[in-house]
Length: 461
Image 1 (tube, rainbow, N blue to C red):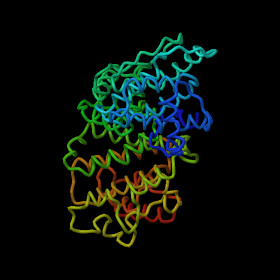
Image 2: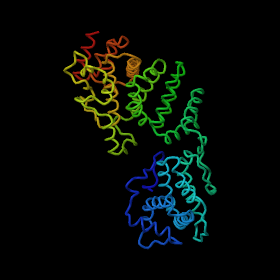
Image 3: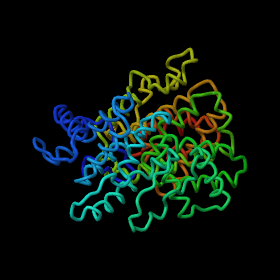
Image 4: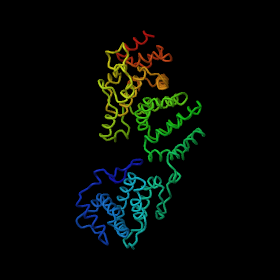
């Protein structure tokens, strides 16, 4: 169960070391499946057979694809797999479903055929007691396991009738239609209605798991940036915020760590940040940041607790944060600049351009969300300090205004602690932000350095 049954919405890794057991056991299992008329384990226990079946299936698939085994042999093998212990077939299909996801469309035929053989009736009679009852349970499990991947590949597999009620939201996606089209269509309908109904939520959830967080978030943000009417753009923000609650933590990491930096550092995309879609995106980004940070603060989310160490290391390598070396994103933005110190204002050259209240509060910067927020504010700081103005600088202003508005509504001292102190002196140069009220709202006044920066900025107004 622990090896083959992932949590809802999770996907097995078919190349995980747990699916690569002792090669001698795999060889003996393959020989047993291929040569015996009946499965009788002598030198292997049943639980060892369950753990070895995935590697055995891979060997059998390779042999079939290379013409070593004929289809008749595959039928005999699949009969042996499901003919005595139904759990063996469940383990085999669990791995096959994960394997199919990794293959190109033209490489999936044999794997899907094997799933079809394992889910179909036996080609020979079975006289074992209660076998038919166990097959009913097995088929209901296989049907649930295969639902997503069959939908994704537009494959039909006829599962024997189990007498169990079908799952209410299965087959929601129209077959043979690209999932991007489905996503844009369902979002257009939701936007027109003005609310997200239960069926749409299930479709969005299916698409999120099928396409992945980056694909899902990126394509919905593209739809938001197409809106040219203010009321529609604001409605889209509210709807997207509710849709993103399907996995707010991961969506926020993608939105703030990949999508926004991509839009802000690529001058060919700056036109998409004009008002009203730019204002709407700034609002959505702040809402997601504050929501994720407030739910994340003080306790790791259940997903976060399960995050593997190597996953955290990936974020650290992806978002380097170093006082001496500017982040990758800042280097991207300032690659055309002549002055390497342009990121900090002339009066603050002695202060590190990335020093922020979060560092003085010793916030854990190994945490992916904290890291992404810190890098986003470094990028904002570099945009405000650069010589190039455009829609991206206007976007930064809207983003900061939304932060201030949300703080006034009771979110004091949250995400703005990641903003470098040097940003304050740059921000007050923007006419809409040049007021003592704004300076006091964006500066951490609990720190002596924060009070000093605020006083300096107010004196310069």
